[in-house]
Image 1 (cartoon, rainbow, N blue to C red):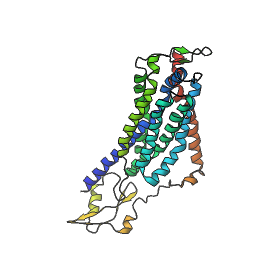
Image 2 (cartoon, rainbow, N blue to C red):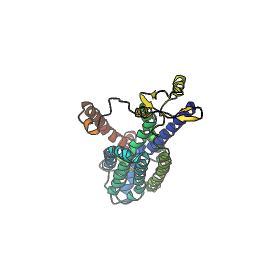
Image 3 (cartoon, rainbow, N blue to C red):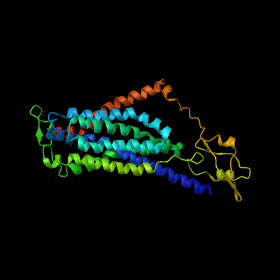
Image 4 (cartoon, rainbow, N blue to C red):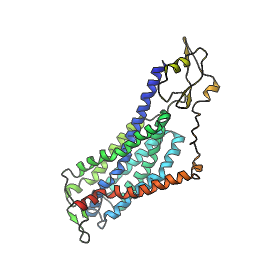
Length: 330
């Protein structure tokens, strides 16, 4: 009986992790901006009044996206505590997908319209949707938080590997090179071929719809565990024997957290007493610091500063890696 119950919990936990991975594979698509920037900038130069736009200008789209994402991640965590992972996730995910979808229209208008849709809206949605899937999965496997975070954020990181070739194959299937350059900067080249530029707006249309569909299935897999549900590994034989003692025994301790179960005796179930149930999820790690107290910790500012410096460099690399490659190889 106990073995089958724990097996049920295991597969439910892995379903939640799969849902988180699906969500983060779409949110991590922002890392493909370096691949898209040459097409975005070229389209804006050739097909809109923003003909004087350059790569140094469109980098601000990605900068705004990352800024909005970072600013709204805490908001996603706060909302998750109040309304649950599904509602917050679907709201953030579809807001992000809406930003990508609307870029189909904004890129045909102006540079500032793209800032609004792909920078502001996509960034805010990505930030709101980032945390809930992680928190939900960790509730199912509290003793394996590192593994859970690694798997889900791994989906975030691998997103560029998935979406980069898809975007390139759709927009530039013949792998054409930029054929237009600036007089004042001959090495800074842009696309002028109609065969390439014609496909740029519809790429965002397809991506937005695709992301929304994947996110929908990912969000369906998110659900918090019941309070009295075991959230960890299968118990040992000794634990099972202890749980089926006639006196009801004590709550099983797994990974440092107390979990209680109904104990079957003959044809009837006998529940643990109230005092034992109060022990559920009362593990103290020493890391449960109130949000505003975190800002008084030196370790927080060291981590924050390190992350800031790292991200500043990554922003420019991710925004211009394809452009820089072409400049130095052609």
